[in-house]
Picture (spheres, rainbow, N blue to C red):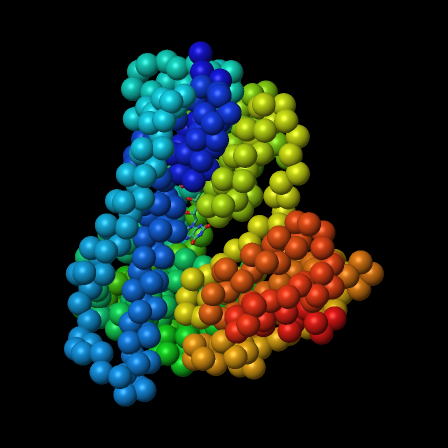
Length: 445
Ligand code: FAD
């Protein structure tokens, strides 16, 4: 009998397995597909490889504007695709190696739950004191005619040649990253978003700023529009939508559906009586389901569909199994959009503070007055900081600008340490760095 059986080897599953083995526990990890899960094979990593290519192309275009000759700029997608594949392969091999460490038994196949201590894979039974379900999520569709004509994020990452035009249904994180990347590669991109603004969970000012930048770069972004059908046409596909009560349509060579993701539920949950809610498997603060000893971490519980949230939840579950308390703050989770410029956020938005009736002050600082940003020619950007008036604790931070995803980490640490904004304001920041934009924001309080 193992100490733990983990179902699914995404960032939730494999990191927890490695951690458990490092603590001397015996672990079996079951994966039906490839090690690394969505994140490594069809998510974070391949998209970021593409984002890097887009960034380099943007830099080369910028250099041309300054008169630097960078050579032939005709775009060939084949080497970009190959590089993405190579990056994924390299990292996947790393995870495979990690999962062959002492204490870990990797089992290839689809797991079905038999009871609260038993999992069946390829007809064989494996038992454990605890089971962690980390089966992730899959792309969700829209209940509209022709929905199956659209590609998913999995399909677009497997596409080896570029279309002339692409219509993206859904302006969330995944949709906007693909929009920015493929538009840089020369594809004519249209984004259709149902909400008033793109990137609904992000701060409105920050999302609007990104929309302006991307629109200037030629991406057509249509908001407050309800897509109601996709049909095949002579030139590709026609996406029909309603805008301000009027029927409209756009025709393009390919359509990407990126309207969210849904949990992948392993078979047998009902047999053992695990509660499943609207978002996914229901769990308590220790990530335990209503069945003793059965946990669910990552996308499958629908709490926060991010790789680092999956890993952190795995740590919490592991600590609970080991009977060890921890102070991981699972509500302080940064998120980012890897467009150029990047977006990043942590904590509450201004709108959420207003809804909760919080007494806060909001201050902004801008990349355009930062020496490093000017030197980098990355002056488009801002940091918005939100501080509670009574405690002076930072309750939220929102960034649009170069290296936003890295910059936000300073605030994540400060929030974890319950540090006031004054601590940030008196901490010496190196010069010239983009970190000084954060310092300028903090000093205004
Ligand atoms: P997954 O990574 O989905 O892994 C689950 C694994 O379980 C899969 O390998 C699956 O094959 C396996 N499995 C399922 N059912 C069974 C079964 N019955 N038996 C055996 N195995 C099974 N997140 C970020 O934080 N940053 C990003 O930049 C980012 N970019 C993304 C870009 C895209 C295009 C997409 C789609 C997602 C992105 N995400 C990003 C989200 C991130 O990929 C997920 O949040 C993360 O992968 C969730 O990890 P997980 O371990 O819960 O599940």
